[in-house]
Image (cartoon, rainbow, N blue to C red; front, side, top):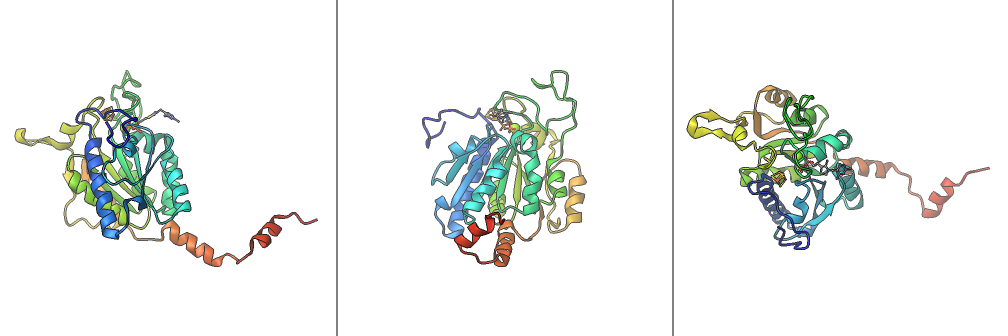
Length: 289
Ligand SMILES: Cc1ncc(C[n+]2csc(CCOP(=O)(O)OP(=O)(O)O)c2C)c(N)n1
Ligand code: SF4
Ligand SMILES: [Mg+2]
């Protein structure tokens, strides 16, 4: 239920990981605004379609701008936002289906441009909103409503994928510790270039992975999630790749590289562009006989 938009009246299921991600995003937005002494309206949340995308209606407190786009197109929309107003701190919120399936082909171009946005990807290994179909991160053999005899494809590894296509800030976390997640999201917002915070955010209705992630420490059962060792060097491509060869879900910053962001590239082009009046520009388009 949204206090902000009572007419947009729906609920996430009890225990949904997206609640934790919302808390983290709110804290990150608030702290980012305080850090930069900017109003909350200098932030914009661009959402895809999914339970995860509904986040844009549910953020409470001081309001950023919100743009609920279409399924899979958060990155092209955020590119448009940055072209219109490069100063806006632009945060994409999307699900594993939205970002990696229908929207998957946009990640490479955003990485090549080093588009200055932060994507918070809520990975629950399923299409939650449309009631439980398999997604690119669903395990091989998993039985879902769209794979009644077991999923035929292998799951993709989003973190390795981001590394291989040159995303310049990659963090991985889970929804259960929102304060720590908030710090990662804020660090990602401060990164100049394309940053992705990939969050394991369990779907309690269709794919409840809390125990798999966290284990059952009291019973001595280890979970898949583990803290990245303190001596990991996130500025090293080799160290990041080696980390991603390990089994399990690493928690923390995997990789970061300070390079030219899209804005820097634009400024360089602009400095080379000939200074023309509007009339000269129009004349240059006329076909000459
Ligand atoms: C172009 C288009 N194709 C398909 C859909 C139907 N659809 C809506 S949400 C969704 C998948 C949602 O899964 P995910 O992105 O993982 O988000 P979640 O609900 O799990 O958070 C699909 C297939 C749509 N809205 N638009
Ligand atoms: S269906 Fe899953 S992802 Fe959607 S609100 Fe419910 S628990 Fe969350
Ligand atoms: Mg999903």
